[in-house]
Length: 269
Length: 266
Image (cartoon, rainbow over the protein chains, first blue to last red):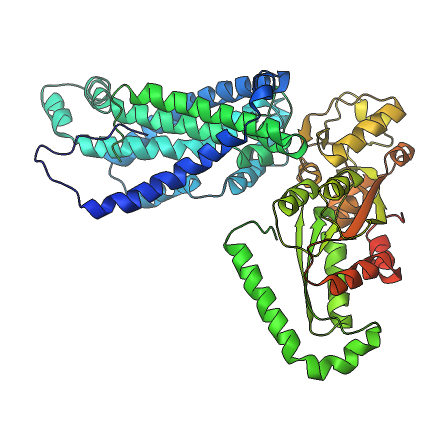
């Protein structure tokens, strides 16, 4: 995910035995990916990937994941700042609640969203009377993705904020800068790598979102059927197509990781 | 209970082992009971791979099987028929396979997984389901195409979706669904939660949902009848007990339980 961080300035070695479990771990991740490559029907690979349904699923996935990332940044940055800098009772409880989607099974997230934004839900019923229908729309997909991805952005940005400390902010404040100016010119520039890392994580998580989308948004080509949902459906009828689409999803993910990692991305977790 | 190569499988294996042992231990006491069944003593454990829609009926028949053959144990793995065939072709150990359609049973035949010919034991047809009380007043298949009625169906790739397509052709009605789900249970979920106005599911799913939904039958459903075949697998370690379960399902006791759940006779 990230380039190997430069080990401190002192040449401290690591124990030789540690390479064994580390290699096992790497193989555990890499071998299943290689297994997919070996299963690919290369003769039909290009037609499978460029078929109408695959293209619309990929396009929808990229569009919704981008929209979700924007939502996550708009809501997640203020949340991370509050959690890292503000001091108020119940902060740790709030923090735990906000991070809950990290450990929640996605299908549970889907059910929770259903009872909030669904037609019979807490807010959905009122939205319906206002003429806003979320059920079975692309908006529902973005909501599901944002819900599960938001904690990824919050957790990495909050970590970056804590690591950065308040030293520079204090100096700026003593020089007469107002809180908004301090946030804009000191705090956020300091944590830009953390913000980028969080945004990449949120985008990747959105791209892979499946359970909550399936439960909450439905599945219709071009509207709600994202790449993971298409893979799940194709698996029923045409396992070869499912394998090809899986590789497509892996390639998109690798592309994102590589392009962002090349900018000396550091995850401050 | 999905069994892939994971911890669950190991637990299942141990459970089967324990069941097998207890079967041996209780043999002396149960001999008189099992001999009632007639053709020899049936013991050990049986694993049945069955379509997800058979969960409740096969659960009941499993109880009957255990009661009739004391000392035997029967384990079920309920999943989508195509998932089950995939698992079987990859070597998953099972004694009986019951599919929700003939297409997936044909795959098992082609992969020479069966020890004999499959037997048809039930049929299932589609029905319209609506949220409780049918708020949009759907009365016929053609009503599903009305504007303002949001309809959820199965995707054409899965059996309930291909049945839906057949019905559309016969009825001459083109549906514009708001969602094409990959499982019939997902369609039902969208109706019980009130997300959509109407959906197409199997009669047995509608019956299973009870009061949570209202079912609207329609004459065109006869155009797409799904037939359920069952067969003993070639690699069965306990073919006699497996055959006994198939006989139970295809016999009068099986017919009674299946009919109660809404399955038709083959």
